[in-house]
Length: 80
Image (cartoon, rainbow, N blue to C red):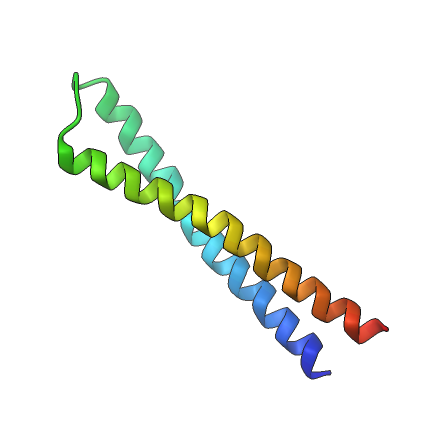
């Protein structure tokens, strides 16, 4: 019972963070598209911001896969 609850909490947390990052990703993509049309190069601060967001999205992908795998393992161990 406790393992199943922990699995549901993990899945819920992953869904919430994933939806928030998805929203920020869409907003960032829109601002990048608008900025591409109005500039030739990007400033060092913009480049650092872009790299930071890329690292965040890449790490979140692998962390979410790990957490969802853990939740699935907890769910499978309850059924056995």
